[in-house]
Amino acid sequence: MKLKLTFILMLFISNYMSSQISVQAVGYWDMNEKYEYKGTYQKYKVTGKDTVYESDMTYDVIIKITDSTSNSYKVEWLYKNHKFKRGNKIAELISNPNDSVKVEFITDELGAFKEVLNMEELLSFYDKKFKTLIRKTDDKELKEILNQVNNQFKNENFIKNNSYKDLLNFYTFHGAKYDLKKDYNAKMKTGNNYGGEPFDTDVTVWLDEIDSENNNFVMRSYQKIDSIQLKNAVSKRLNTPINKIPEITNETYIANRIHGTGWTTYSILTREVNSENSKSVEEYIIELK
Image 1 (cartoon, rainbow, N blue to C red):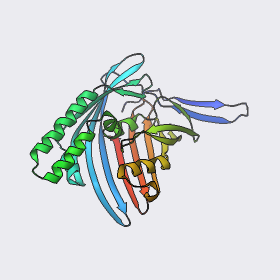
Image 2 (image 1 turned 60 degrees about the vertical axis):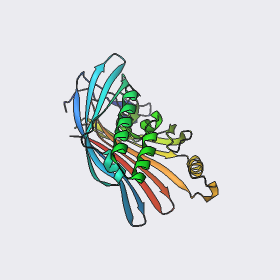
Image 3 (image 1 turned 180 degrees about the vertical axis):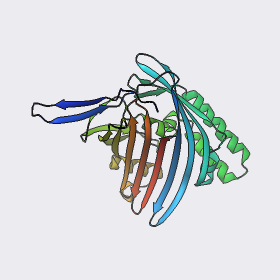
Image 4 (image 1 turned 90 degrees about the horizontal axis):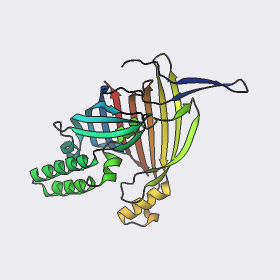
């Protein structure tokens, strides 16, 4: 990766002669600039000492800057070379190595994600994909499951919450300035796959490390969904009284290493849902090749 002398490293001297080191995550990107990344996705459940994988796969992503203006960047993510390693039949069918999926979106002038531009194209891609899978199978049970998944992918919010979470995580820290080792606390909304209103979520963000020699820094965040809202959503989904639903926690951990040019070189998101003696884990990793 080319080095640009644009790493924003600021030293502030206060009235008390103390110092504070800060960085700002900003995209300094050129037209047609592109890099290739390796992606890893795992989803599994741990019960006691047993681990069952729902999905374990790898893929490649080519990220390219296709346009830029004074106040925005247009970016393209091309997903390809999906390789299934282990998991259930649905995950195996979905991870077709011949598939390539393109997500086009814009960011603001600092590189913070704004919106997807080709949502209709994505909706059409998933609809054709699942209809083809449904047509090719004679297994009635599998056909029914595929129909259910296909219906989920007809919803824009479901696609936003599940199809390109790695992409959103890649840019999650862009646009803001952070002081080293200082916690930034906020609240946000998290998508609800149970079909209800988004969940209230507590968020803590902090600048964990600065590597001036290699012109990069590490950002981290911790997110926790409101447990009462989560229990209510599960209760409605299962049609079970809320007092019969055990305590549930949904926590997400994010860590990104960001180069001074604004390119994220390594990104990991881990979401853990804990209930009684079981834990469901979902993990995305994107790393520069």
